[in-house]
Image: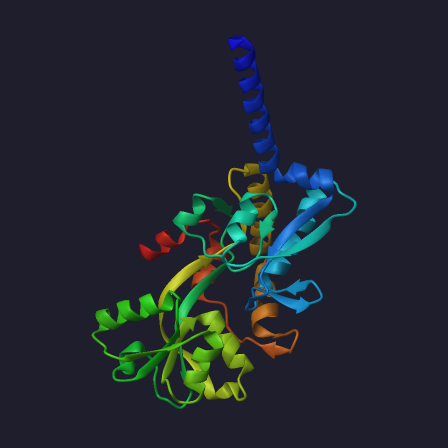
Length: 301
């Protein structure tokens, strides 16, 4: 009886291990099914956004489409169906972990806490927290915000960066909060705030959609940098290598720079507005020296 029980337990354990291995082997899963699931965001600026009717576009979406085209060639598949799965900040990691999403192509920051649950491809975009002001304000740095009203969005990390720099520079200003990014920009637009502090991409996107974009500009020092990367399942070395190799090839050939220009410097759908955010030096550095370092490594600098 004991021997039989031991045999049953051992068999069950082996089955679980095999199931885990099968789930972790994304390349085998894609080859067997002829399909791959791509996690996408509906409103992550120029990185990933919806066009409606289950169509998605953006810098990271197109990078992932090219990665999956390379995976298709590697696996010798005549056809590969891509299933687009909209994800949110709350569910993106669980959906990657449980296999619903094979590759997440939104706007996820690579940090040490997340690396315990998932893996990241080499960094493709480095976000910079910046300051937006009216073009005629004369403000060019955080030091000039003394006594001013500075807007940011409730619940974002920009508030922390703002307070840290406020203490460090001995500059006292008044914080005013918008309930969302559009509301925060409205505070600046209507003159209730003298500056808006947020991710550079979000600032640029709001400026691009303003009635008179030329009335605003992004100025001052970078308050923080965050590595944004494509997310995949943890402990799946063959798939990570396939994804990384594809992205590194785009970096080496200059194709990734062309994609950046397409999505950040040229008019994009659905409204044909131009984000107008030149590639940052931090992003160029990530392309020149591909790596999957977490946010904490950037904070050490």
